[in-house]
Amino acid sequence: MDTTDFWNLIDDARAQVTEPADAEVVVERASALLAARSRDEIIAAQQLLWDLMAASYRAPLWAAAYTINGGCSDDGFDYFRGWLIAQGREVFERVVADPDTLAELPVIRAAAPEGLEMECERTLGIAWDAHRTATGEDMPDDSFTIDYPGLDPEWDFDFDDAERVALRLPKLDALYA
Image 1 (cartoon, rainbow, N blue to C red):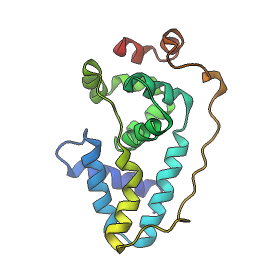
Image 2: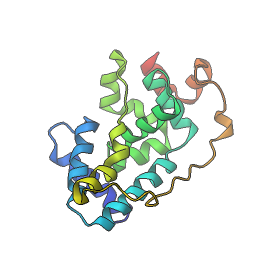
Image 3: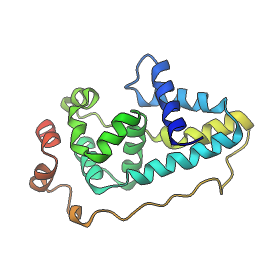
Image 4: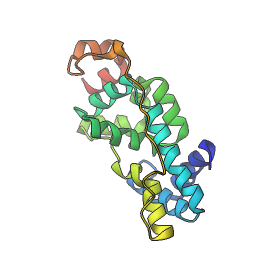
């Protein structure tokens, strides 16, 4: 399994559910599809997932998650990025490149007035759950590594600083003001 295969898995899961905006349902389906693959592919998917988590470990995205979710702890940022992965490759890549484009997503526009949080902890267990289903065993402890980069020092400010966030994420600020 490579990155394209992983994204195809997510896209297939999204196509097979009635409500692709529901990350929990997408993840459940993705895990079931992955469980039908070989043990080696499942283990490879685990590393690919964490590589995507590392690629999206960026301060501008964290500020966007903080704005959308009304705050965002370390774990909350993991769960937000899990939600983002469940949205599919195109959305993921666009949003990681420019987090302010989150304001253009229909799911975000619909959630903003009610203050609904965007997170999906279950995404982090797609491969883990698939491995358990396929083999009846836990995934080996040494099956993946997590290597987060350093955060952008230009974004080293309190995300409660509405003025600074508004300057950097104007579309999200307008939506959540």
